[in-house]
Image (cartoon, rainbow, N blue to C red):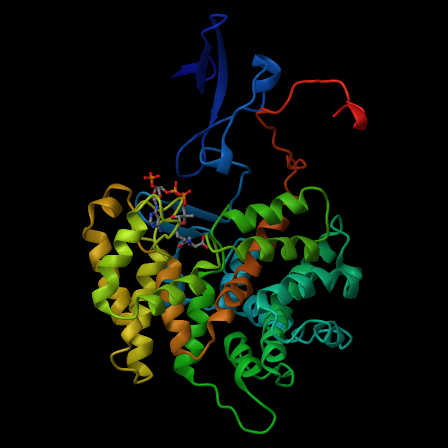
Length: 438
Ligand code: CMC
């Protein structure tokens, strides 16, 4: 393959088919930053071949203006703003506005948006009955998949994807109601009554209130805890075309309604290679139990005959520190300090594990660094969350990213139904054999 400029100044990549000696030119498309992409849309028509890329390791599936990641440098930008600055200076709801609308809100836009979200946090009362159909010991993520999928049956006045107003209403409803739905899943699983949202609380405070308060006692939300919660939401809000976001886009590409698409995203997020990793990290740290067992776990992670992987390590895109992990590590120390949790053994094991892994050739050569899930579980544990809620929290925060990406896709005139091709390696055509002849 060669790269050259032709005629109009447009750049092309030339692909040579050695079997025929023919050359084919494919245009290079530039983004605003980041590597150019090869436009292979005419590939099959011109060459009669498809590309083969399981796991989409080299495939750009869409054009997007929402989030940019430079995995080599460890950079994450939302609408151009660095994640570190957003985590330090912004709030989760302001970030929601930014992701959805493209710009930071003015003071009045911000107030209006906050009021809209705050005033739509209640769910249809009938939805309560849906929860009662689940077993009490159901995993909250299992309940989330079901309940969010059912939302289109409750809010069908915002399922016309071709109406921009309905698209925005559905987006606001999802961001507003997802904390209520998530905390109800938890309350149901522990046999406590559902707690209604309160409009005088911020997004993070309200989430904590619905999660931890009970009718029998006063619950005061700690400002330390609510600030940490808001920051965790910010750090998980969007991450361009990851597995769950791509799932949302793929589901939505057929014209499915937004509630069904977000339910699909939740299902994809649940896996331990994706959002389920934060729960798995804590399980792993508990299993390690003490610093002297770290070496043994590192050896297991390196052993190709052992399926065990160091959870919270490695990333498809980051081949450097995950910038979210850096913010979270700092936050973990601050939160534990402010909450007076000295010498948290799991944090100590995590830090030692990180130190040993970052010096080990296996991890260095493969550029495996701690990712966002490595430290988030420790903070969530310190804030009082049970491990079964960790991935649910990820889903609450990621809902805005999913819906912003879904909206962008629907509004993109070049959008097509997602329909990859395959390399078929099964039987070639053969005649049917009657059952008595098999
Ligand atoms: N522990 C041990 N070895 C690892 C790990 C790990 N955590 N991650 C990757 N490797 C090895 C892997 O075995 C392979 O080695 P080799 O080249 O010798 O075959 C090499 O590193 C490349 O790994 P890969 O599986 O080809 O990389 P991928 O881009 O397909 O997978 C990943 C990325 C995140 C799924 C993977 O690193 C992983 O399973 N990590 C643990 C789970 C985790 O923490 N997931 C959270 C991801 S970040 C948040 C999110 O997306 O939700």
